[in-house]
Image (cartoon, rainbow, N blue to C red; front, side):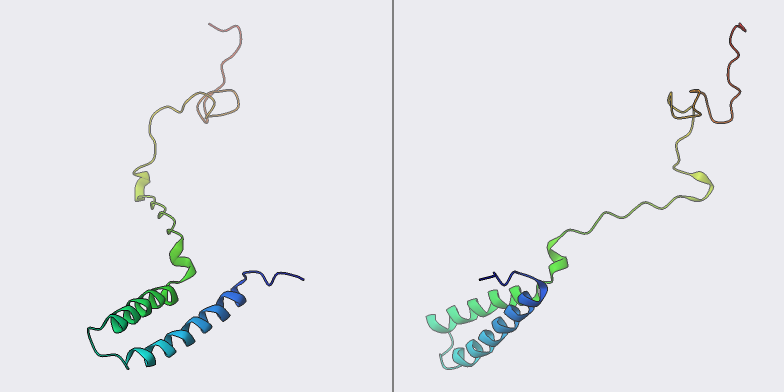
Amino acid sequence: MVSPGTGAGQQAMAMGKIEGVMNTLFGIEEAFPAGTEEKTTLLAVLKLLNNLIRKKPEEKAPPAPPIPAVQPGGAGLPTGPLPPGAGDPLGGQPGAIPPIDGAA
């Protein structure tokens, strides 16, 4: 026998069943007077189930941090010389004239 899995369809069906149980419990809790242990317990269960139903899957993962915007005029970009190897393939600054061997 194959396991039914936990896909989105299965989860949606389960949430629908939980909502049905909640509707039944709402009808039952009205039969008990306010302040009784039964009514207090049923209201606590309904509150927990309501939190479960209202939670969306995307609420479980924290949102990605925003990417900072580039300021006009290059503000916030690094200035000064680049570290070795970050420029052209010869190791100099971009656009720099490569050194000539034997000249010095």
